[in-house]
Length: 290
Image (cartoon, rainbow, N blue to C red; front, side, top):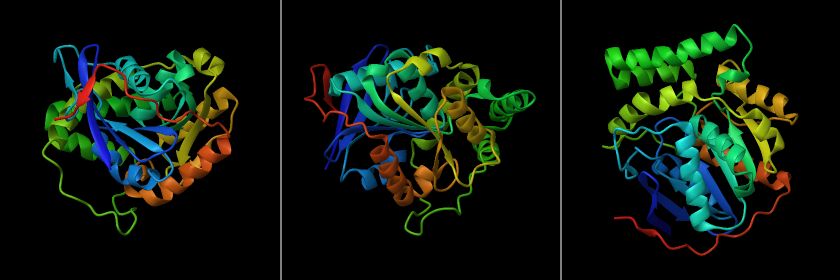
């Protein structure tokens, strides 16, 4: 059974979903992914975890109080802080992909006590890249935004997919390519207008990450070694003095290969050795989603 609820946070209302039983595991999607983007992966994890997914503010059912006040990566991290605080007093497992990984790293730098283990899959942290790779990567980020302004969201999505080497054919046989949901285009517009520039401008607090009590596990795709986000994952591991972990598939494998990805995530979290608390009782201030 999946429970859908709404939590009011400063400046927004967040829709979140809970399914399964066991230790709390938060999944934070990449790109313009809302809670539904993680449905297949969450379904593979719900037999061992209470899986928490959500719509980032500005996407789907998570609305802004003031649409003229767009979020930053830090805003998104603060949303996660409020979401976790509303659900549990114990540190949680957290997995984030791409922008989701960047948001989760910001959460850990600000609230490490809330996260037991973070698996950060290919965070687009260009500050980690040496020159001239850094300048090329930032130019590519800017190109996606420029294509969006000149040619529209779908053309920008094609450009982004090419840069991330996303191969729609690299999917498990039972993961079908489904038609876009009605909210996909508005979500994509919001991501390209606000979140993509926020990612390009964001800088990780590496000192805070090194000092954090959270066990941070940078992760990369086995099939994505030729893209700079993969390189960022490996360089983050080097910066933190830890080993990176490999997952099946490429940059988007959590969506395209959920069964293999979940199996690997089970292994990684088991080997991390930490045992976060079970989900606590919901606190006041949230309401069922409509």
